[in-house]
Amino acid sequence: MGSDKEIHLKTKLLQLECHFTWALNKEDTDLTDLLNRLEEQIDFDLGKEAGIVRTYNSLGFVKFLLGSHDEALDNFQRSVKLTKEHHGEDCEKLLVVSYGNLAWLHYHMGAYEECESYLNKLKEIKEKQPLGKYPEMLGEKGWIYLKFSSTYYERAKECFRQALELEPEDGELNTGYAIALYRIDSSDKLYTPTDSPVIKQLRRAIDMNPDDDVLKVLLGLKLTVYKKYGEADSLVETALKNSPDHPHVMRYVGKFFRNQGSVDRAIALLNRALEIVPNSSFIHHQLALSYKTKKTHLLRAGSHHSKGAEIQRIHNQLIYHLEKATTLRPSFVLAMNELALQYGDNRETSKAEQLFQDTFIVAKEKNEAYQLVNFTYADFQLYSVKCEPLAIKQYKVALKMGPKTTVGQKCTWRLKMIAKRRIDRNREDGEAYGILGFMHKENREIHQAIECYEKALCYEDNEEYLSDLCELRLSLQ
Image 1 (cartoon, rainbow, N blue to C red):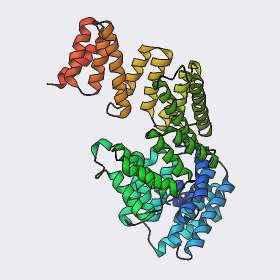
Image 2 (image 1 turned 90 degrees about the horizontal axis):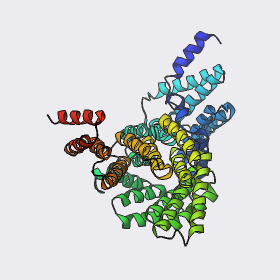
Image 3 (image 1 turned 90 degrees about the vertical axis):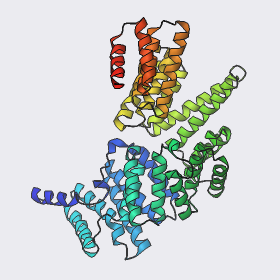
Image 4 (image 1 turned 60 degrees about the vertical axis):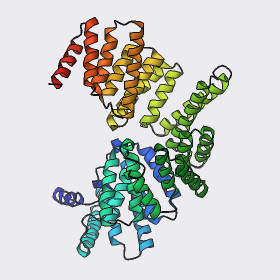
């Protein structure tokens, strides 16, 4: 084929709506973990034709990214076959994404005639019914964004929002929108349970999909934030009764039990879920967090000496499940971060240090949980390494990333604790007052910050304090 013809084909391909044009960057996800999750999805979407068709399309794209072109072709063709089987002849617009994927795949395989054939099919569909942005395509786009990476959740939300403007009564689209809102929602303090957008959308999606037990558990989890425990318990127990062996239900119910203090019940449920999906990094991570909670309960109960062997057994389980989670998904930032901290607690400081450095790289590249990693590393320096100066430096770095976040508030508390402890030992500790000044400055508590910096400069000649003090005074003018 001549290069002019190839350029002409590529120009047409770039105008398509499919996985190849949706800016899905393989660097933003862990492809092996995504592959496992998509394969699980097929097993548990039996009876949900739209979900299976969608998953085969996504699976084909992941196979392509992994270099398995023949397997990619097989999955794309399965999506076409299933669509035709379930919708008959009146399914052309439902094939637009699949045909687009097939056109792109044949182009990459050098099968240019087949590529052109699919482009012609798409042209015929468009001539019969001008498509523009239609809800089925927007929905499929939203679902792959939800599945691919947390960095794409906002894009997913927007896709579902646009799709619902076109088809407001569609159950699948309402479900997708509810899940997208749930995953990105951090506005609990801004709303009541009656006007929370995510709670409203979850209720709407449940009304349209009364058999969707995952939605019920998500609503239960969200209601506990507002202390609506009675309704939350009822929703979760109903979901577990209706879907006792569905791993997605089990994993979220496990999280619910842990949050509510029923740690042993959470552990038992999640262990049973692992028997169904042994390669789930998410379930291994949830199990690890459950063991961490159980260990904390035992330590707080003062059982350290009488139950030393039990605590060590729980700690070993905690480490085991974190190592499994990070093995199954090597870029699992939250699991990596927690594992590094646990290595520190286990006095394996060099191992912890190396893992923290790896976690910093992954978190920064993925733009995921970077503030949390900085905070956790500060805790590691303070409690495991006993290096207070480096801990203070790291708490400051994390606090600057967002003082109003949950992590930011924890940084504020840690810095205040360190400063107060030092001042109790020495009322003339200029650096301690400087720490308080920085903490108040970042939290926009201007008058308190000025007062602390003035005290700091009484005991320590520091250009940074002076510069911050001048800046704060100017801000009041």
